[in-house]
Length: 142
Image 1 (cartoon, one colour):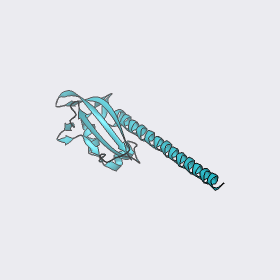
Image 2 (tube, rainbow, N blue to C red):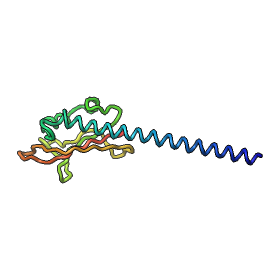
Image 3 (spheres, rainbow, N blue to C red):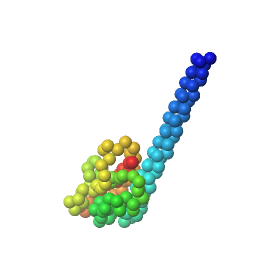
């Protein structure tokens, strides 16, 4: 009888542990989806409003203004409050774009982030009188 009670208690404990694990996995999935959605929303906002003059054409003066801004204000303006962010523009060789002596990157350091989402947008920008394909990345993490 004592063995049966002990086995029953063990089964209940294992069920509770399994249930808690499942709940944490579901919550983590929702957090990840929110993070990915926020990254896409922020990149869409940047491509529609903040950084372009025509569809998929980055405006150099707008880009320089953006990377020269205040981190907290920019975070609020692009709708990513509650997340940390980093933005960069690269050319097709993977080098950070430079405009007027300014590296086009802005934000925090994501190297130690455990929960990270990245959105990428491709466009063109006039650099030194040449229309150059560039890739804009926005990284978000918690």
